[in-house]
Length: 99
Image (cartoon, rainbow, N blue to C red; front, side, top):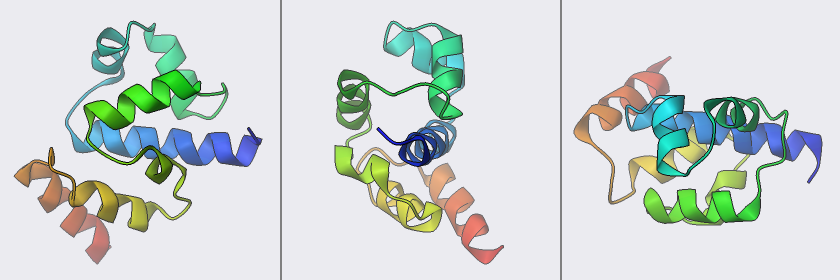
């Protein structure tokens, strides 16, 4: 995976996590990882393995391919329209769009 792609996926993982009110330790616990691995994934400093990306997409009910979306606004639209999206996230997304 190219470094630029790793950074895109990492940014989207962070957006997804924070949109659901989770911290890095929550993600680490859910997927049997260390918090430092999650940090490296989100910062694009470590290759995100396909099993992790698949499990994330299943857990958050999004298409795995959407994690590769280069435009943050488009990615927010994808997760805002997901089944597991909270009203609080919709408010955050709405605020983001107005910035």
